[in-house]
Image (tube, rainbow, N blue to C red; front, side, top):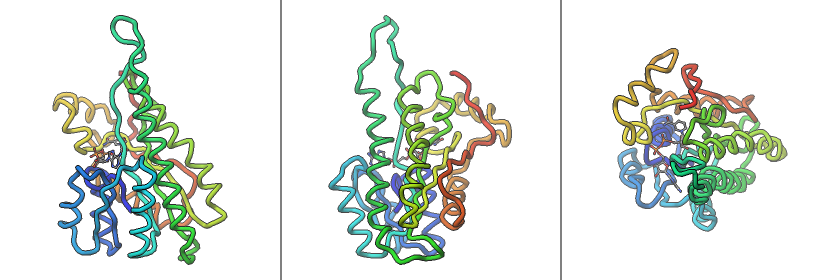
Amino acid sequence: MVTGGASGLGLATAERLAASGAHVTIMDLPTSEGAEQAERLGPLVHFAGVDVTDEDQVRAAFAHAGSIEPVRALVHCAGRGKPMRILDRDGAVTPLSSFTDIINLNVIGTFNILRFAAEQMARNELLDGDRGVCVLTASVAAYEGQIGQINYATAKAGVVGMTLPAARDLAKVAIRVCTIAPGTFATPLLTNNGRPDIVDALAASIPHPSRLGDPDEFAGLAEHIISNGMMNGETIRIDGAIRMAPR
Ligand SMILES: NC(=O)c1ccc[n+]([C@@H]2O[C@H](COP(=O)([O-])OP(=O)(O)OC[C@H]3O[C@@H](n4cnc5c(N)ncnc54)[C@H](O)[C@@H]3O)[C@@H](O)[C@H]2O)c1
């Protein structure tokens, strides 16, 4: 199950897992290009048009995926940020919804996906010691949130924070949970919204290699976590040693 699988890091993960012969369900918004991407990736790939924050939609999508093949791996990539400041230029507070919307998508959405994935995986037979593996997506903003990222940094810190307790909680049903904290990757989230000069400056600020990450490098780490039975309860940065500046 790859959420956010219609674009960027999720799409690269769906491509990599499908190429290795896995059945993949791309879970993404109905308005996304998930259906077209699933079609392109071949008969082992399906699309579920779902909002990850919606309980009923997510429950139904996992039940449907589980009726095709046991759900053994989750890579949860659906998420995004939206710039906000605590106070506006005039010193007035900004709308609370700018904060709650991003918490809802990134924290509540992640927990919603995690719990229905766990429900499906707990029914699986053991395979190489596991019933399932969940890979969540945070961000280096969880550690070095920039000015304008108060909502996003708080949300991604929430994903980092849930990783160890989730792994401890699900240990009794032999499900592993890890999180990837990406630095700056060349996905539509970054390259479509950012001005080319800003994207170039970002790339230059990465110590080594001084370039944006390739989404397939994220996918490779996700695939490794799935296959490495000792990886559990940890958040792994993949960032070329970048440490974000305040702005
Ligand atoms: N690209 C980066 O540099 C970077 C860095 C750090 C963290 N991240 C995180 O990685 C994840 C993937 O980002 P990306 O760069 O691939 O972005 P992207 O915009 O290319 O892809 C995100 C996908 O999530 C989907 N999505 C958004 N809200 C959804 C919802 N409510 N329900 C279902 N699907 C939803 C979108 O439709 C989209 O297809 C996000 O959580 C993002 O915060 C990305």
